[in-house]
Length: 201
Image (cartoon, rainbow, N blue to C red; front, side, top):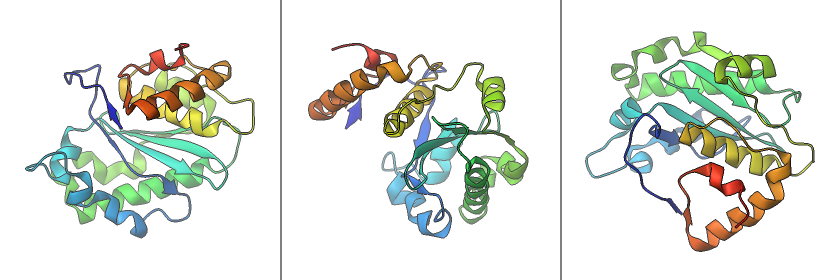
């Protein structure tokens, strides 16, 4: 599925998204995600140059029965844990796994040449509580009030972070989002602005 193209500017940051991270398997098994073949954006682009241009690394995280998202802000040197049930435990553990993965990637793939700050990723600000996230984002992270909408919330966190938009969706939009996302999948494309996804089609 493709998203509508747009000229890259400050409102449309370049992002790198990984496949979902299994909570207890992050590290060695995911090395294949960041091979040059997996991350190639064109015949002459390699992983190092792609990461050098990225502002965000977005990682869906599967917690067994619950989907969350980690956003690594390479420019601001923040790690954000976006969880639609913010009081659930596990955020600190996930962040530790991500830090270990980033450290390994930086060392093994020579990323310090383009992102020297990765040498200190362990000391970057980590935000996984509601208070920390509000301070970092300047807006609230929407929360689910059901038991089966975490996947939709995770998709929306990813889309809005890519678009650099404050979250303006909530639990009340979930049914509309389910219908619209299904329609987008059938159509084979997504509107660039995720705020339009919550509108009735």
